[in-house]
Amino acid sequence: MCIINSSKLIIPSTSFYSLCRQRPSKRHNIRVQRLNRWRRLLRKGTAGRTKKMVVGIKTDIMQIKNLKLYMENQSIIEENERLRKKALLLHQENQTLLAQLQKKVSNPQNSC
Image (cartoon, rainbow, N blue to C red):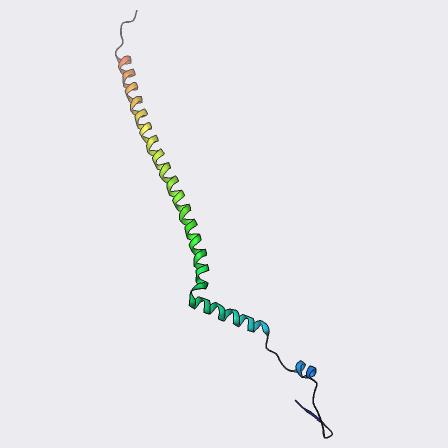
């Protein structure tokens, strides 16, 4: 950019020239570089490893929790079965005792 003033050629200073000129944003370049790097890592498969590792760790944690809950559920089911059998035995014992009591009441013995 040159300014002509009464047939004299004046070359502008570099600071003025740098102020007038539009510079591309460095942020844009950094974003593009990061994006390109991410794409390159994805192609190689290294960027996905960290994400897969995190997902894998989460699934492992969920599987461990699931296994613990399953084991707890199984122990509750076993305890429930034991209590059910115990209740059945108590019910049968109660029925036999009630039948014996009814026999004694229906057959009064001579008690003097």
